[in-house]
Length: 210
Image (cartoon, rainbow, N blue to C red; front, side, top):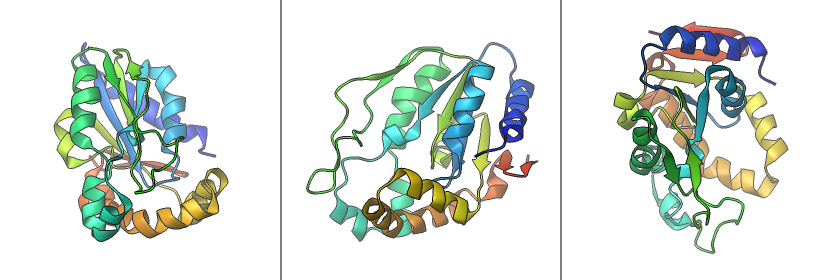
């Protein structure tokens, strides 16, 4: 479990940076199982925030065969549909308007070719003073002009693996590791290394890079 002191540090930093009437956009990024969603859920009600799960914008229309043919850098680049995330969620909320989108339907399971359908119901988020993007790849460079605070959540590999094993079936995890582990490694070392974030949160606390 993520220590409360970690989200207290983030809460304090959000309050420090909050200025004027414009919404503050916070990206909480990190490898799968690092504790991003726990932190986002804990901080959001304390700062008047609304959470956008960026997993909703997974590139659900790419078949398994295409994913497997791509290199780790290509998978990292295409994992989330950042154009749709930007247009449907970040830009409207940043402008003080409601956001409305259809997330990919993970619960329904993959189709035979590995693609996913979109949820029938729209997800709606009302305007809020703080917009929290929660998910791996949420601090993508293509969204940098809209993000006010980029946060990296770190956890030891053993802890992350234990968390993933507790919530996913073994066969799914095996496929996930084969496809996405190297993509995350590339993204968090080459695209968005720790020094590219404003704040790094760990079980031991936090360290600023800017």
